[in-house]
Amino acid sequence: MNILKTLVAAALATAALAVPQAQASTLKQVEAHGVLKVGMLVDFPPFGLMSTAGKPEGYDADTAKALAKYMGVKVQLVPVTGPNRIPYLLSGQVDVLVASLGITPDRAKRVDFSRPYAGIEIMVYGKKSVKVTDAKDLAGKSLAVVRASTQDQAVTKIAPKSTIIRRFDDDAAAVQALMSGQTPLMGVSNVVAAQINKAKPGEFNEKFALATQVQGIAVVPGSTKLLAKINDFIAHAMKDGTMDKISEKWLGTKIQPFVRNGSVKAALAAKK
Picture 1 (cartoon, rainbow, N blue to C red):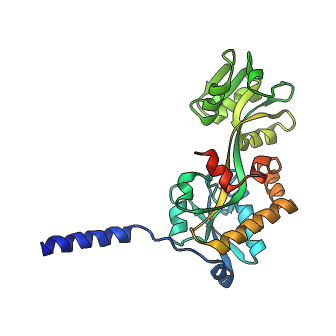
Picture 2 (cartoon, rainbow, N blue to C red; picture 1 turned 90 degrees about the vertical axis):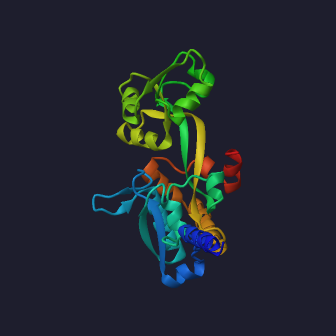
Picture 3 (spheres, rainbow, N blue to C red; picture 1 turned 45 degrees about the vertical axis):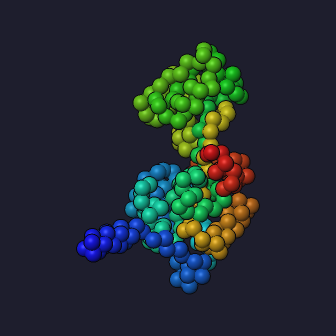
């Protein structure tokens, strides 16, 4: 019996060690070190990517640099992946995440989010000459989507029966259909729309939104003063045009109202 108890105790101790303990970086610690360690994705352009010089860049990188400047410290950009970004934060390998992290109820159980600083919008998009303002205007029109994507699901749900939904295997094929004139419309994210606008400036525009998701800067739960500082930065950057400049540089448009006027509470309520 004693041996069994010993084995159980050892197993529990090992399991406890295997679970990363949250290590919050305080505002005072960051200021004392003079460096803000920021985890960011580098495989999600234009929010995060590697430059030709092998350095992280993108929407998130510029946001992180602006945040560090506001805090009066240097920035250290730490590449992370989708699966390991939250573990990197909770284990103390980074102080914050500026890593295209959508604000969702599940994630809010593990991290604390700032107010939104960016967002993904799924929209109906197309030729400027095509008059479409809502779902009923899609009747009889042809529209390209990526097969089984969120755009496909959203369009299929609201489009009139007479809408011709042309499904393609990837974004490149769907974009080609739009740009070549095979279809006048497309279900697309604002990220892809920005790339189209760069390639064909002035030819296309957003018709109406299908869905939105906002992104927040994440900290370890309980990092009250650090989170307050981050929220102060975002409010200031929204007001003085910093975020608009970053958004125009990487997405081709100013900060969208659903991001500017968004909140953590609203984002979490929308996901329920």
